[in-house]
Length: 464
Image (cartoon, rainbow, N blue to C red; front, side, top):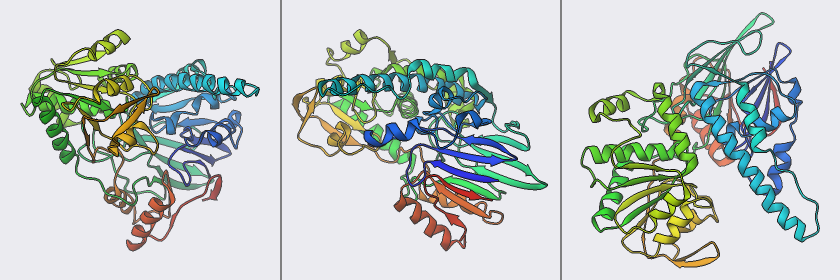
């Protein structure tokens, strides 16, 4: 058996791990590498193996850094099943189509600049049509259901608690009379996250590929984040203002909606209109509603008490049209608007920010990590002026930042996750983490007498 680490090695994106077992090739994830434009196109377009030779793909979850290069894989000759949980298959289909649209738009933008310089045009990484071709290849499976992706391998999905449908993957492998227990963590979630069940931790395994995103940092309790968000909403509404929230369309938006549902039901905040203004978020929420099997017991109990769905309540409106979105900025009454993108770089959120940033009654609420040089980061840094669509706006509104909402396990849970297999594991391979984070985690595991922990490089191959 051989592992080839073709992505998420020494970085946090582009998850792609190729296993060679019994003369067959099994690919775990096929994500987009996300980084500087000059690096990403070439790296995502060219595989270090022939897609035609891959015998099966197993997808841990729908996030683009894990699923986003599937259209290229298929376009370049892959023609077998893509195994995923039922919720992941539905969500990935939606997100890949959106990604294809973005790839086309990005190519159009780049080509306008290239034309000005007399340079030939570039092709998009893939198109929306390419992305839609992937959907027919999904083979949905339930959590804990055994299936055989390639001969000699029995696979199962286990709850990862990261986003809807997310899973870790266990493999029972028989090769040349040898039996191997293998575990791929995917992205590990957290305890007590809204809506979702807690992650299942591994117990008995021989080899494990494990994420290390927050290997150097533990998170605040999600209940503290809930209280912070509640206080922001309460004080803004009481002074007659609007709360504007840039939020990722899948996962974060649904968590915030559920939190607001609870706050208003339990009278934690005044009942004011709540708008989800993002076509992708609206469509993603429809998928969340179809997969109640992924929700935790606490959510089921709340739904029974409140007598309405977790992601629908009286004060909530999902806006679909541009006209509905524009109308929100013509109103002065208190309200909450949740809109994409999560780093305020594109989409309808830009219009809501520019129309509300100069009113001291309002609050822009930052609920996730913001990359350097993005509008979201400039807001989080409380810059006095920002530029939006080429115009300068003075920041007079409140800026609130809410920590503790990450859907990734923090350091404490990562250590617990790894030490759960201490008695059986022969090797652990840390992926999906920058060097500082992974090496910090590796050091902590060494303190636990776990010495066989590795941080493989990109395209490194390991024989087991």
